[in-house]
Length: 290
Image (tube, rainbow, N blue to C red; front, side, top):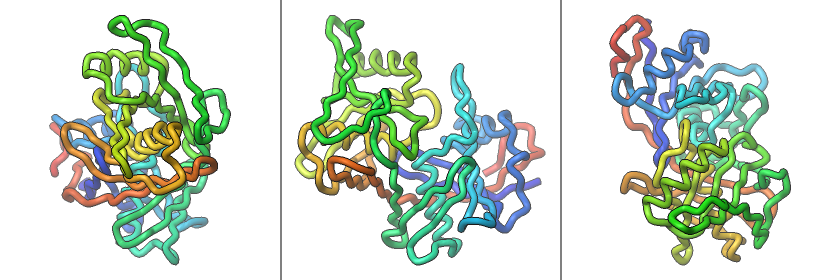
């Protein structure tokens, strides 16, 4: 069986989108082995996950996000990715599923609302930023956790956050950009603590740069990382306005637009774009064709 797909990218995250709205394609075709294969960047097409869009009786569209197996832990298949949701929104808009600039996606556990700013720019509300202790993070709240184990004879203070709408992923935020060796040592610590990713933020006037010098375990989420970087800079009093976050990875950057007033929900927008289209054969032994 040949399954057509689109590859979409947002910042440094790329996904394979499969249209089950008009094609008879079941989620059950994609077991862990096949997801791993198609997302493998050497044997398969390559990607941070598979987005499967299907018809919904209650909302505009339904979504399954299938994550590849990574390392010693398997991310739960029902755990949604904010970057993937924005990529799905681009296709849903082109498919004519938006209703008055508003799209409601039926997820496995809850519904998610996406706003269309124009034909290419979409934004998602991540919810209230919260610390690992469950407390709301507000402007100038410096809820820091110290890594006492020295890294090159120094300690690093960092803040962990997640969001009320996306609570499963915690991000470690570190002010400034450490040297590569120290950054990698810190990211190894982050993995051991079951924290999703690490962000090193540097403010530049009206914008900021979010660096991820060492890939986190499992598929990345550029939207969450940009939001975390904004929170980090906001703790120094730079919130209350829209911030342009440049997500930097492998010497490339792409802008994400973050809005936060210093309290309450945080909103991130981005411009997903198509890379290519192809077909995945469920009968092929040596990997998918693209």
